[in-house]
Length: 481
Image (cartoon, rainbow, N blue to C red; front, side):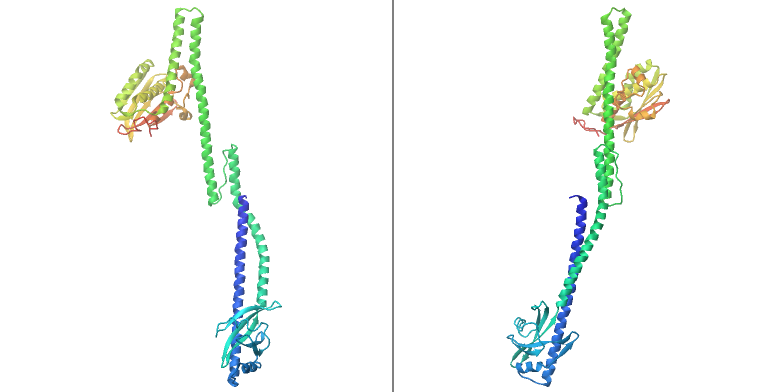
C-alpha cells in the first residue's frame, strides 16, 4: 500500500474510532446519569409511601399485616407523573393489598433482598415496557411486609436508542468530511516525497543537477535538505571522476605522443645510416640526433618510473641540514645554468628539514630546471631555504616568462605544459612539476606556486622540521600524514 493511502486510511480510521468511542461514552454517561435520577425518584416515592403508611398507623393503630394491607387501600400518593401505585406483599412473595396495580410480579424482588434491607431492580414486562421496581421492609408484630412501587423507564431506553441512531448518522457525515480533509492533508504531506522520488529517478537517469524545494523545518523538509546536500556531493564527485578520467586519457595520449616522437627520430636516423652511404659529418649528425633523442627517452622513462615508484610511499625520512643540501643541489645544476648565461644564487639558513634526500633533490633539480627553461634572455634564479612556523621552506624564484593565472591549477598534472612547443624544444615532457607534487605530498608537505606573467614565478616547498616525522620510518606503505 502506498504511503498516501496509509496516511489517508490512518487519519480516517483514527478519527472514526476516536469520535465513536467518545460519542458512545458520552451517550452512555448521559443514560446512566438519567437512570440514577430515576432510581433516586423511585426511592423518594417509596419513602413518601412509607411516610403515608406511618401517618395512617399513627391515627389508626393496627397490629397485623392483613389489617395494614386493608388500611393501605385508602392511601393515595400523587406526584408530577400522576398517582403512585404501590403494593404490600409478604416475605414469601404473596400480594396482600395496596393501591393500584403494579405491572411486575410480587416476590421477584423481595426474594433477592437481604433481611431488613431495601433495594431495586430493572424488569421488562411482556409488552416491551421497562420498569424500575423498588421494595423496602416494614416490621410488624406478626412479621415483615414489603412496600413495593414501580417507575417506568421505557422512554429512557428509547431516548438512548434514538441518540445512538442520530450519532451513527452524524458519524457517517463526519467520516465523509474527515475523508475529504484527509485526502487533502495526505496529498500535501506526500507531495514533497513525490518530488524527492521524481528527483531521485532523474538523478538515476544521469541528471545530477536535480534539487528539490525545501519548505518548512519539519522532518520531510530536513530530508529534502539532506537530499540536496547528497545530490551536490554526488554531482561534485562525478565531475571529479570525469575530470580524472579526462586527465587519464590526456595522460595516456600524451604518454603515447611523447614516446612516439623520440622513437620516430631514432628509427628515422638509424634507417638513414643503415640504408645509404653517408659522409662522416652526416654520420656524426645522425648519431647526435639518435643520442639526444635516446637521452630524452631515457629521462622520460625514468620520470615515469619515479611516478610509479612513488606510489609505494615506503621511504625512510631523516633530518637533513638545509644549507648543505641546497648547495649540493645547486652544484648539480650549475653547469647548465652557466651554459645558459643564467646566474644561480643560493641562500640557506642553518636549519634542518625532515626529508628523503634523494627524492627531495629531484624536486630541487626539477624546480631549478623549470626556472632555467623559463629564462631565455639570462637573469638570476634564487634558491632559498629558511625556517618557518611549524617547519622549513625551500623556495625557488626566477625572472622568467611566468605562468598565466588560469594555468596555475593544472601545472602539476602529468604531461601538462603551458607552452608545449617551447617545452618539447627544450626536451621537456610535462612531468617535472607532477613529480615534484607527488614527492612533496609523500613528505607530508605542501607545494605552492605564485606567478605573474612577464615577471617570473616563485615556487615554495613547505616541509616539516627535523624534529618531527611525517610518518613511521619503517615499511608501512601508508600515507605519511
